[in-house]
Length: 225
Image (cartoon, rainbow, N blue to C red; front, top):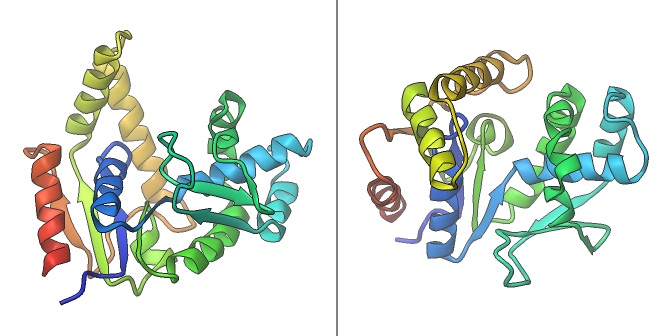
């Protein structure tokens, strides 16, 4: 029996969905598409064209009029995919510090979310894709062949981020991180446009007591079924 061609993985921040999604895409030789790259792309386009990211109407117009493509990586430089605008590779531009500082503003705009959801759907319907986000199974690809909602408690997700920061040699305060995780959950789950939730037909996996390999094994079994 063939593997599902369109796989949607949703979940809250720091639930491990990007790690699992990329590992799954690599194993299947599929496109790994973290939809966050599109919001980064529009943010970079706005900055590069001198558009004020605080101008919701102007940024929304950019999202509606600028075709963005996401394809498998063409360069072996650790990128997860190619991000293209007018056939120009902007993959690493989307990771610049100025983009990082403003993408949360852009991603909150309802018009931008609607416009980019259409573009994400266009790419997803090509098939052979693992798409990761917060509204893939509910909004972007409601007819995906397999929907997974990867969950974990706020405490566990904060603990993972805390450990990651310490492992990098940085300093971190667990309670501060936990408060940030809870606030992000509140924003994501209560927004008017595409709030974070599991699709009715999604398989929910709670990873509180599982490591990455154990989660991947469960996801792989779902694909193999």
